[in-house]
Image 1 (cartoon, rainbow, N blue to C red):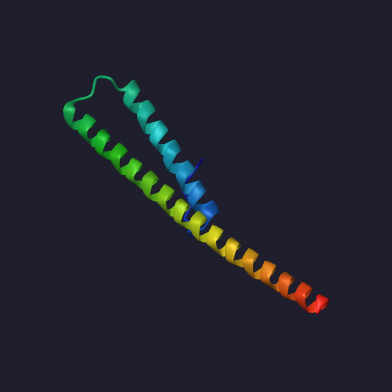
Image 2: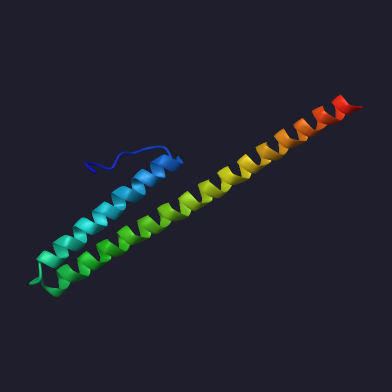
Length: 95
């Protein structure tokens, strides 16, 4: 992925953000493996950066879960409404 883009908080936007953040995390881990001779301060900064990225990924996953849950509730409400309408139509037809 080239650049992180600001998208509205839709399911697709959050999925894209999660992919972006996970790619960023992988690249940073690869750089850490290549740089074996770093001082303690650099290691601490890298660890803090990784922690920040992991927190961002966790937040994104939580947002995805909330959106998915809300969408499932809306779909279920719509399904129940449609079923009730259909039932009412059939009841009216047979009376």
